Image: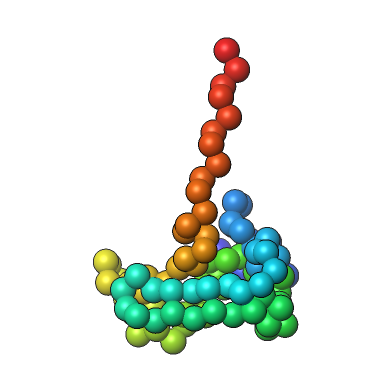
Length: 95
């Protein structure tokens, strides 16, 4: 598998850094008390706008001692603001 890097398209369906609204991007961990927030414009200066959010999260949490773990004790980093977003209601199927 070819490595993904800046300027490459993310996996199908993954949101990209450019898809986030202006303002703060919050990151938290479900396994520890680690929390942080970043200005979107700062992330743009440090990462390519087409960076997939899962890849960006991996970079942000790269220093987590659990990041390289296998099994159920892996790093629990996530974007709380995205997790709180309700899923869109599915469109009814035509009959």
